[in-house]
Length: 442
Image 1 (cartoon, one colour):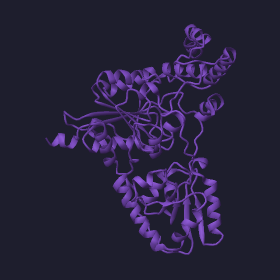
Image 2 (image 1 turned 180 degrees about the horizontal axis):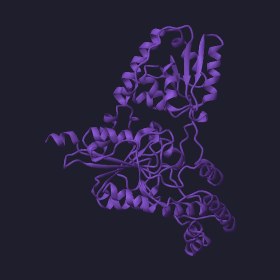
Image 3 (image 1 turned 120 degrees about the vertical axis):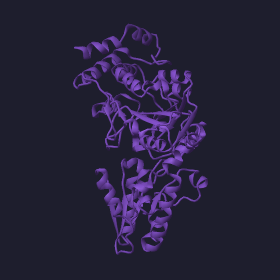
Image 4 (image 1 turned 135 degrees about the vertical axis):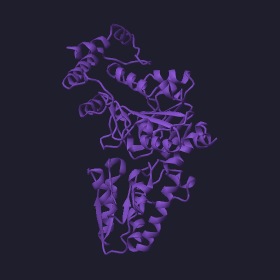
């Protein structure tokens, strides 16, 4: 019964009145067929009612690593940083936290939900209505197509930066429901980390707990520094949250192409610890193994890659190693068995798969984002596209010494540019934060 009553209160007379007059709850106009919207809303309620949304024994879920105060700076004057992220995407938020702790900062991470790949957590709220299969299906059914599509084509939108807007009544009601269900857990988490004493808030993904930015507005008024850090397709597909974007003191992104989507975004390298992987050397062997590991075939251009590798295989002794849908450790073992690796042939540049291969001294072929090679001319990548992949790989198939030389250069490049401590120092310099190490020594 409470599960039905709660949304009924949310679906208030005020909300209906605003929509009848053509106003969206979050601002802007709403082209609305009210009876259809109401039917869709009650379909959503029935779906929500079929699962357990509310954990009656609400508690914060501790992460997989020790998070006691012993891990944090014991210096009284340590700058305190709080990271907030929907998920620990590609382990980027937690890597930031680790690097900041190494530098003497008191750094914490709150995530809304768990990454399915099992990356470490600090404080995970395990919030409902995040990423359940039924919810993904509902989004595909009701949201505009562009909000759910991930493409490997570099398309600059008409609006810079692209802005997130509610698609209408049904989505507005969803956000209201989610915010009500989340409120108590969020409040408890912020008390646990003593958010009042935090100096810097970094939003990894460019979002906070509420789409209206109520917390960010409050924190900004209290004098906290706000950093928006984009970590993937968030800026391309969703866009900025206007209320949050306006409050940010700094915008950074680990995706190079995001510099074309936001006039104020600074590119920083994806934080990656190359020392976590050991170099592999296979030397000269009769059959050269070429790996490819798509998480999303369309985004990686997998079909074009496989077609080019078939052309190469018809004339030369190669074996294609397709690494797909495997547990992380098994995928790494397969990757380590390769002599060459092909990351992607789209417009969006290299990703974590490429960094892992480079860290293992495996040469990587990939497309690069427009402008990347000009800004970083010492990059180690074999630049390819969907038409010339076979031709560009041929010298590396034939020459084991060329593979060895290119692989060694790749590992050193990753260690130089993607070192998490270096990346964090870059962000802090851009944000005007003090050097914690020099503060402590003083």
